[in-house]
Amino acid sequence: MFAFQHQTGRVDLAFTDRHDGVSGGAWSSLNLGTSNGDDPDRVAANLGSAADAFGVAAARVVRMSQFHGRDVAVVDTATADAPVPVADALVTADPGIALLVRVADCTPVVLADADAGVVGVVHAGRPGMAIDVAGAAVEQMRSLGATSIDAWLGPRACGACYEVPAAMRDEVAAVEPASWSTTSWGTPALDVAAGVRAQLERRDVRVTDLADTTSMCTIEDDRYFSYRRQGQRSGRLGALVRVRP
Image 1: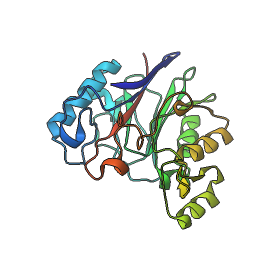
Image 2: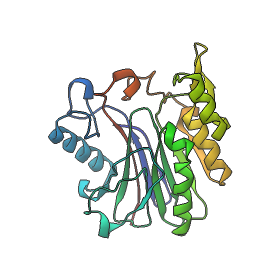
Image 3: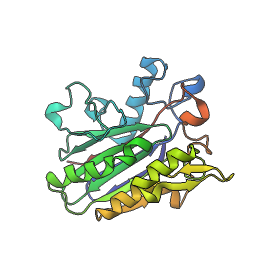
Image 4: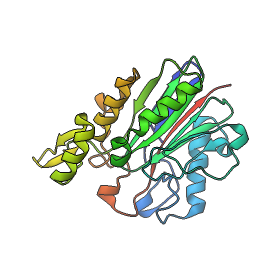
């Protein structure tokens, strides 16, 4: 269920893989996405299982409707039952909830200041990285009192696999040079995670990239869902974070 799970101070965080759920077919088995054609009841069961394994009630897990923008939603217990926010990052200083971001090739980011008790999650695809959505989340966390922030980058399409047209690579790399890449077969590519890492490090955020120590490419590794590999009906992975009371 969890490709990676970690505790630091009062903060718990985890990144899911695609196993130990109840979905079938293209979504087998721990699909956390609700907009790809999977049975909503099975997705709800998967979300419940992931929440339970993470140690929180499913009703306390705050999600977002992601659209490749730069909007950051600040959430807390009072807003947990409100409509799902339209945003690409969530931040909170409330230990009563957990935050969830969902991806299928985009880069999931978990942010935490364990001492201040402020955490966040970010959905960083190519468009979001180009407009620095991760930086916007860091700014919002600092407005809530975070001063020493750590980040974790999880499963995503790697820079050796994420092929794009040359013009797109040039356009994005002009904004974030660290994202310039080439596929393993020699064609233009983008490394979204490298771009996100550079943006975070420029803001004095300490970054742990899980791909530095284990396989994390969603296109290459079928332990993960991948939109590029599986198409429109691919499932969605998740990253979770919370501050323990």
